[in-house]
Image (cartoon, rainbow, N blue to C red):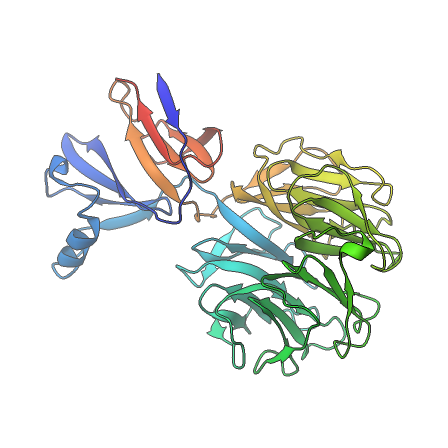
Amino acid sequence: MIRWLLTAITTVSVCVLVVAQTGGAASAHRANPLGVHFNHTSEDPAALTSCDLLAKSAALAAKGPLWNWHTTGPNGGIVFSIASDPSTPGTLYAATLERGVYKTVDGGGHWIHVGPDHTDVYCVAVDPHRPNVVYAGAYNHGVLKSVDRGASWTVSSLGIGTPIIYSLAVDPTDSNIVYAGGSFALYRSTDAGAAWREVALPVVVATCSAITIDPTDARTIYVGGTASAILKTTDGGATWQLFGDGAGLHEAILNGIAIDVADHNLVYAATVDGIYRSVNGGATWELRGDTIVFRAIVADRVRPGVAYAAAESGGVLVTTNRGDTWEPLDAGLTTPVTLALAVDASTPGNLFVGTGGRCVFRRASAGGPWELTDEGFDALSVYAVVVDPSAPGVAYAASFGGVFKSTDAGETWRYVGLDYVRSIAIDP
């Protein structure tokens, strides 16, 4: 019998040891937090502990290629943000915990890691007019910029006074103007990220987690975060209006803002208290739907009155009546932990959702259920692996994405249930 032990999630990852038999000789498989393991056949695997990984690998590196690394999974990862390339069908970027940015060029059929590695990236944005230019907001790096569609990245944070960037937006009419939301500040660049200046706001925003530019009027911008209010400018940031408790927001902390494709006075806000709606350009707001934590919200690019919202523990919801009601859109979605949403800019009916461990799911424009798109997405933090002593080749992995099972000594993995699993044990 398998016993799943659920504990609090931390940001500390551990190394674990998996032992297999190959050709009669013992082979040690050491899995790292990203689902990667290496093989070493010249020592007794019983002598290798999960704590000696770093010391041994460093010492052995000087002696030659004794350790052979290869990725086996399980695939997955925590996705904070997804951005679509509007000029190239099927090209999207995903911002992840610990593993930087992933990219797909076939609509999620396969993902590749484009870096930077060992970096928490919270947001990603593509220049709509120069799609070779991609921006990423990272922990301890500020803004990262790529001018070759993610192949390489450079720090582009001159003038930014915070090490963390939570949100990014590129002006839809001028590629030189870019906005970045950080800790206690909103920044603006007028030279495509070469330098930044802080934007004067009427209130302190401790975490500026949402920036949305009106696609029909780039001088109209909505900003939100932990200020318990939404800020709006109609003159490109020269002056700001503050909509808070008096406007019906009731000290809501914002995670996302979306504007309807046809009626630009219809604005939605994803908050920790639920979904708010404004029908007058943000002047007043009303709470609609469930009072749960929502992490992201996007408007349909073709159909007026249609929008999608990602709940932290409630899956994806959809409205088809301008936010009057919200209904679950969860068929095929095997995790309720949804954190990011994106509509494919070149194929507007295709919807993508980033999750808290299972990476990215896709829902095609023709409708139908969600499908997992995790091939190549090796950003999953694995915290423990156990081998079934009574079943050769059977192993279980505990991870952010839940419990995974392998029946072929770790070469392939299958999701078997749960979310956010820290420990796992087999009842002897």
